[in-house]
Image 1: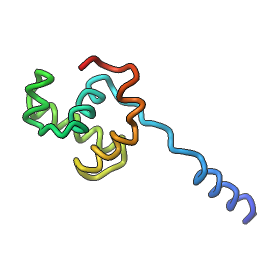
Image 2: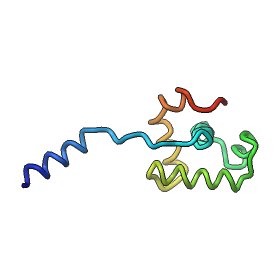
Image 3: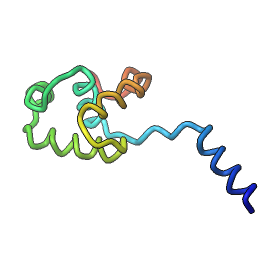
Image 4: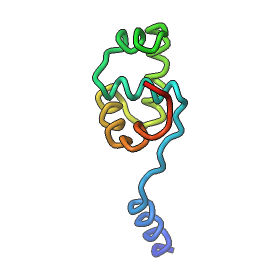
Length: 90
């Protein structure tokens, strides 16, 4: 029994976590955060209300399993290959 549990633990530690499914708008917001823009600047850039940006930031933090904006930006850096591939146009 312990062998099975040990193998499960090792397997999950070795396998990278799957990338979260982000909407096209969340990808745009993620790119902007990664670029260092503030919510107000993101809202202007994407043509949406600042409150809407905050909603997307909350969703991003939940999906990326992070607690703050800095961690979102760091996570965006680790998802760099996804940010440049496909998704929405800048």
